[in-house]
Length: 498
View 1 (cartoon, one colour):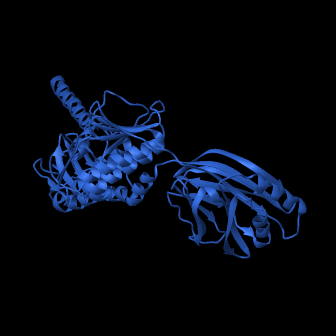
View 2 (cartoon, one colour):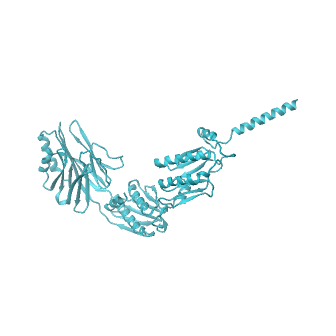
View 3 (tube, one colour):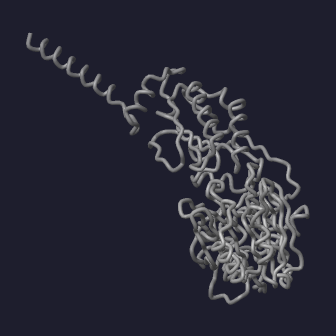
């Protein structure tokens, strides 16, 4: 009897132990929500699944269209395999023991190694080191790769395997140029290294290479030159480099340097121009040897903006002070915000003898006067369009300054890169365009904020020449020293890429 009870007890303990072991299956570190989804996924095949969970991993910088398309892919994979599939950014951690589909140009090393030689429009699907690498260097190419994966690969997926190790596809777009090297190395092996201030120059170089060869260059932000690097296109602001820009081959790198953005943009323009000369051939092999020094000079202009208004009644104190303010304004170019025609004659009458007066009618009994130093400009003309009055002033040194002023109409204003734009009472765009100065003028009770924007110029000095605020009238003149930010040849290059 005792032997019988011992045997029954032993069998019951063994059964409980086996039951508890079955319930303690390794969850691979999944959180409770993910465990629940995995445990309730209906298996399509007998046996163990090929993964406890699947992650579709996308670049952190992915746009809305790619994110939405990636989520649809994750849903389709989950439905076809019966395994819970989650969408993750490459900046987020995934769980050990799960399977990853690397979608697009992620930060994973295996992605970079497989995608480095791909050009615009190229895309692939490969099984490499335990990952599916799917997509191309651009989001549009990656979306095309998803479509092909879902039509050609996914139908064969199951609970046991998502894809054969031998399955793959590679699609290459037609490109006019077969091969592109820089100092003997494929151009796609180069990284553009830039400082915070030179980002736009780096962007133009990359866009140029991509447009004319199809290759996408990598980027990285660096504050100083690192001699341990190689195969970098460095954009360096070097205050100790004198007054010249240079293009040099150094330590296996191409180094563009200058004391300011104007010189650096000139070096970038010369650099891309030489690339372009070779890109017209079937195979491009560009070489930069030694050190090329580039001389240049920056143009500047003294620019003033004037603001004046009254209720229509004569204010002699204002008029006398305004006449004195105009006499004290020595700027090369004086542009007014739209002025009532009743005050325009006062501006014309008090125009300094060294300046020439012109005006543009903007409607509603208002005009926009411009005064320019006669001896300093070979041509000045105005044109009203696109919600602004355009002022084009060509200096005797050949530099053309383009100033646009809000004409007070409701017509939408579109900013262009090679101009100085004055807006009153409103802010421009999403904040990506540089605001170089602010002028605030008005009556005692109401002042208006006037903003001056420019990407092509910087303001090295600003001051209020004169200001008056009365009960119903005011005037103000803001003087700026404007210096070109980028070399004019760079502005032309940038516009060709739009």
